[in-house]
Length: 523
Image (cartoon, rainbow, N blue to C red; front, side):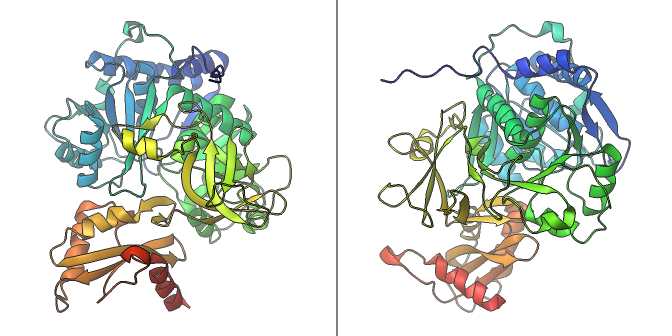
């Protein structure tokens, strides 16, 4: 057996980074909060480390023990970052959830993760309380991302500020890089999202590798508006900036009208983009000068680089890969519209159906070679079967994506796993929507595919075979159930009654034909 190499993070965990940067970069601004309403605020690296340690001690004082899970349910705000890293600092496992989640989804997250407590904001507190009555405690921030709130809070809610204690009382524990760090629920091709578990080594890996890929420097200022429950904001942005000793400017969410004023005010030099944001910014006045060195996006060198006068570094990654598996270059030219080239930090394989490497110009399935718990996620929590199925017999992670190998060695995205949709930057499993629609009375069979959308990339459309062809009220009943059960971005934009669905071999639904129908209608 080949010996396992020494981990780059031996005897380290998130405390190593937080404490180290508080010492090295103590007075430098780390977090700059720019709310849309209310007063902004800044934390130096030293200030932020104190806030994280005090939260960690407060969670421990509530009986939280290393390895136990806590729901962190916010739109972007300082409390979200403090709770996320504060839980991890104490050895607990933050479960970061999408603020758009429905009560049904929240209930699943809380039950599946066996969370012991939860932190959230006023407008989301009632939903979390109803979804997870078993939580031992529920803490709520003072406002909604800076805005005053008149929401009626659950009777058991306590103040977020009350999760505070003297860090001197934190229990001693070893710096174990393989200890669990955090959980994100990510859409897959199953009816319920899978719980991607990261270790502390994963978080440090993401911080270090993303900072390297992005050429981040201590004087950089990273604008963050993508949601903090997601890998992009967590490691491509926040943790990468933390590793580099840079500053983070945090917005509650994306705002096209506020993007440039905030960027100019703080001299922002870096941000992550998604196509929706680029399209929205193209409608805004572009300043004559700005400080941006780079933007990150799913493709290198899009045509909009000339419009915005900034270089885009394209990349590809997944929650399971922590950092970018493929990436462009900060220093050299990239092939336009490519995913860049394989990152030196991973083994990237593009293989045909016989598991042989494809040649230039050919398309194949994308696999990633890495180290579980370091450069690849540790496991799908509570689901060993799904974890096993995520890897080939020789340990390659199966991404479910197909890519084309360019003649110059660049990689180009070809197609997503056939049952995944990309809705306004969010990954959505068709099976999640199908599971809900199928529960509607009167549904015989359902298939969900994506329809192209000028702003959101694509939106879900459900094709339904009714039990009764004359049941014209079925679409509205199904939509009502979707509105009740699914986050807004997962809800179908249309529910279409059909008498039959196209079939492929073994009577599988031929979703490619459904996509072709929608594409033809758009012409």
